[in-house]
Image (tube, rainbow, N blue to C red; front, side, top):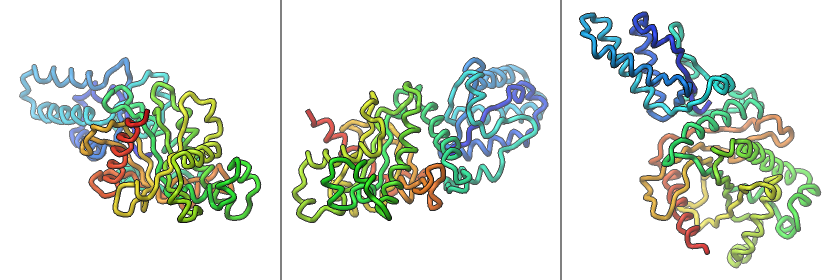
Length: 367
């Protein structure tokens, strides 16, 4: 649902003389609107290239002397259509696999993209009701679309998605709520002994992360991002003195304890999910961690990458990873709000870009 997935009936262009100009014009307008923010993914047949087929039609028309005004108009519209197809993200797949992909719209002579769907995707705001409050529906309609997005980028070395970062400042406060949790050998044991609001908060985090983590794990190996990282602040239960004197190794120990709780079979994974605790002062931005509750999908960068060259797909989650009902992990949290962020020139996006550069520099200094 964060993207419209579409394909085109081959007969639509094959019988172009039967096309109604206003129908093709409206289709072009819709695609252009989606493409402005890269919100359209063309699902194409790898054996029957629709863009190549359309290009041949246009080329044949160019070689004819078009005295027919209707054909001249259609040639211009077909050229616009080819340009729009080229502007869309594209996922090429076989006919068998194509039937298993959720496609929102198959263009033919009789239809247009649903207006409500278009508005929904262009606005980019999503709520539990959009998925019938079901985690299964969410996995198909939202996370499934993110999978197709990753697949559409996989063939490009420059754009391949190899990083998933999930920012949630308060996550550490929920899983490390008190001194008992800090010093317990295992957060799993701590959770099993907990009750009341502490247990509810632990479940909010565990269930939400688990949904995203399982989605990442199930991605095909050839497209699965090599980094799945949850980022959070220093837990507030630490005293001022503890926060001031905490060592690198102590932070790593806390990260490992959280990883054991959130990533159920992490030790067996060839590529391991990570938790990263970041001090307030180390998070770029005047207010550091405040308001950073985003999911970021993009390409890993190195220390020489300039901020203007960083490109990632951003989803703002008002409740971080708290997207699943803590009392029923088959249901979404009824307060879930997700917003696809298309404006990269805002402070939170710049802060995240600066953090990625800062992190790359630190990472490359490590032995």
